[in-house]
Length: 183
Image (cartoon, rainbow, N blue to C red; front, side, top):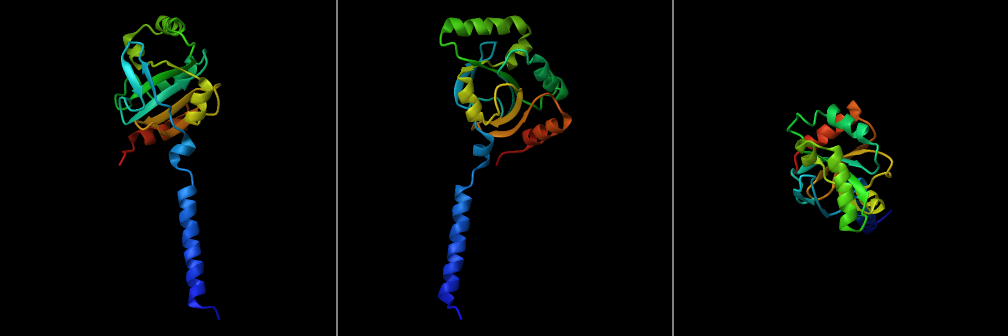
């Protein structure tokens, strides 16, 4: 017959193990990723501090790393009706390897200004000059060959992430995350 001390010891060991696993398990933000902190500006020259200065507690960021992804981004803009739905705060975020000089950055911005001529488009476009590989790692993305639609909060935590072209099921996931309230 085992003593009560043995049972108590086994119970305390089980509770300690459960507590240790709960503390050691990854949080949602470490699994989903986190946008790095950076200063940027829209193509209308409006400064944006990411993530603290995002325009909403939950913002949809359409992230690209390569030229030629315009159609995929546009599929999300049209599919989610972003131009006409004021309930979704969003931005287009091309991530560009930082050329390291003001002249190099200006050249990139000038190409974007030529492509996006309407003030409404420029207001939502925030080019990010940084190391692409670091950005991908930090945000928990799978690489630079896809378009990502990411819901991020003002703490930089990636709350939802989908990749590729617009899809109604993926869009539903994003909408649900965007509509959730933080507590």
